[in-house]
Length: 375
Image (cartoon, rainbow, N blue to C red; front, top):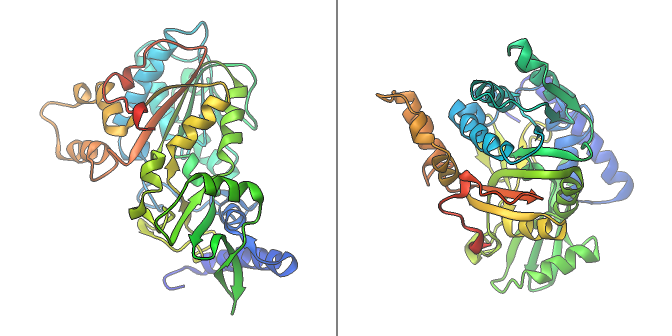
């Protein structure tokens, strides 16, 4: 690969060798298995290394890294939820560089609405180290409220936050064509990873694809078989409160639209997006968009209520984004707001879904443009 440093070359070859050995011993692997190894293999997977991932030095920019306005608005929603709870904790799943946690805590401190604890569930030791360094820049009375945990806590009362978490869950890639339903596997040819189409690896996958009733063939896409169990685990954890899920995706009828017949897989490396997950293994992010109808169905099966669903622009505007802007607004802030809210940027591609348990109060972020009917 061009323009890779010697360390990156070594890293790439080490992870390729790990996956090569697995394929050599057991045969071609599902793309879901390949994606899991590429992102999460111990010490070698993309999210298991110390390489920068967020911001200008990394591969992509998330909303909290782009502007503190995102976190301030999210803090307002957390504050509103807390008013209707007897106790209040925040649990953030996959906390990135720690920016969202810091900005939410600073905002809630100003609003005199701090949570009893701000829990972070982060499986990456490298990212946890970055988060600790970021949290340590906070005043001690805020930093001491943050606690890292290794598994979901029981009986949480409060808010669970997951910003750009679901898109990094491994997905199965499939094709529906003249041969019927097939699955994409990953094999090896001449020391490179290659696609192989075979019969589905399991009957559950085949059954879920049949439910989609795809008629415009050939059609290639992805499906997340792990999402229902993940939603169930969040429900088991939550005693009372709200889960806020923020990610890019669509309702099912848009996700599996005939125009999207090549799927939604995307890779990000040094702020360049492309669609080939079989290169730069361990050096690039691999993501898939979210089927929010699947999220809603999984929530109902897990005894959660779907409290709201809208796009990011409406969510932020409902929470008073415009009232937070300086007057006159400077060029940088204007650019940040445009990226957060413009339909051509993050504004409509990113969605926000609220799931609740034992919680009935209205949520400010969904007061207008609630699109649950589109699910």
